[in-house]
Image 1: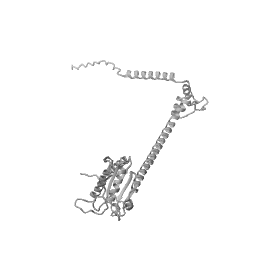
Image 2: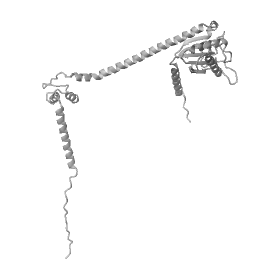
Image 3: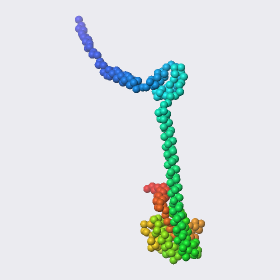
Length: 313
C-alpha cells in the first residue's frame, strides 16, 4: 500500500482594517456647515428690512431677468427693487449714497482744478520774476550808459562800446574798430581810453551786489610767438581787465568767471578776422544768473558726454 502525503490547510482569520482618516473629512464638512450656518445667522441679523425685502423679491418667479452679478450687487446694496408684477420701481438712493457716488468725480475735478491753479500760479510767478529781472537789468544798463555819457572821451570811442541785455545780465563789450584799438596789438595791456572806460565801469560795479563775468576774445589771425597764442592772449586781456576793475573798487567775490575764448566766439561770424572780434566782454550778471550759468554748463557737459564715443579695450 502506497503512503500518501497528508495535506492540512489552515486558514488565518483576517482582522478588519482600521478606518484611517475618513472620519476627519466628515468632521471637517460638519464644521464648515456650522460655520456657514452661523455666518448666515449673523448676516440675517445684520441685514436691514430693505435688504431682506430686496433679497426676497430677487428670488421670486416674477423678478425681471437680469445679469446675476449686477442684479445681486444692486439688490444687496438696497438700490434696486422689483415688484411682484415684474415692474421695476425707481432707483432709491439716499443723500449719503449720492454724495458717496459723486465724490470720486468731484474729488478728481478738485484735484485737476488745484493743479491748474498751481500751474497758473507758477506761470504768474515766472512772469513776475522775468519782469522784475528785466526792470533790474534795464536800470543797470541805464546807469552804465549815463556814466559813460559823462565821459569826454566817449565821442571818439562810441563805436568801440556795445551795451546790451542778455538772458544772464547786462553785457558790456569793449571792442576794436578800424579807427581805434582798445588793446595794444599783440599785447594784453589796454590803451589809455580803454583803461578809462574800464575804471569808470568798475566804480559802478563796486556799488552793485551782482557778480560779473569777464571774457577775452581775439580774431582768427594766428599770433606768432613761442609758447604764446590767441588762447593765452585772450585770457591775459581778461585778467588785465579784472585787475583794473579791482583797482577801481570791485570786490574779489564779485568775480564769477574770468577766462579767454580765443577766436571761438566771433562777434562778426561772416569775417572771423574782423577787428570787432578782438574784444573784452564784461557781463553784469543777474542775481540768479550764476545758478543758471552753472546749470547750463552742467547740461552742456551732459550732452557732450552722451556724444563721446565709447572706447573698447
